[in-house]
Image (cartoon, rainbow, N blue to C red):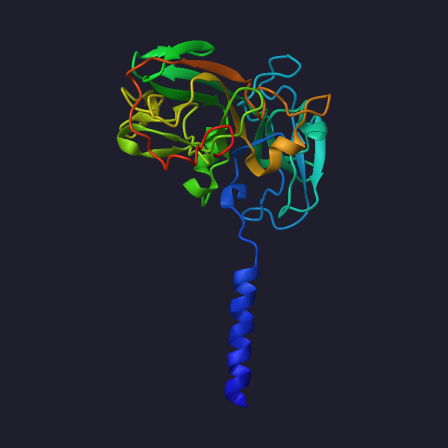
Length: 300
């Protein structure tokens, strides 16, 4: 009987572990980290263990300018411009309506003087451009012959998330989305050099200018003769729509444009286009099973 009970207890423990949700650690915040409007579920418990007040100063450098320059530490006993309360440091929301007008350093506040910087609030930004890796030139909203290699350049101020405590590449919040024409299916990976398939999802963007396929391991430089192989048989000629998104801790649903749509240039880039023109004799062997296209349209 004891053995049976022990077995059941072990089984219950295993079931609890398996059924428990797995959370990305990109929400763990250390003192002085950059956080972005729209991020939710932030965990500040590494340095805050209960409700606290935080303070913001409009002119910390005392230049006499409303909105002042950031980066200066105001006198400890200076009266803050804005004071807010963090109720639950284990589940903090950078609520846009509360913080959009108050970017920069937020300090702990005990009612008389400020303490250390809690975090630095920034407005998110993201954009994308398209690069011809064969000719080494920008081809955003232009046409290229089928057979050229294509790369993508993401520019964002959210690359600092890769420095957060416990971050790993599986937590990356950046993705590129591509479809053939307005009504095409979303493409999640593209054929590359030497029959490799290259993912467009959860991209580890760790620089403010980051190429999808870098030069060797350096993603600050575009690859040469590598990237999306538009000469692959799976690639249909036509106009492709391309954009990038960041859903860092749910921001894409939390930080919306005034009309309620996804906010272009904040959490989602504007849509860019590239037209691939058919060039006889430039198409190579497909990198996936023919009859199961990864591109828009129906499988035969």
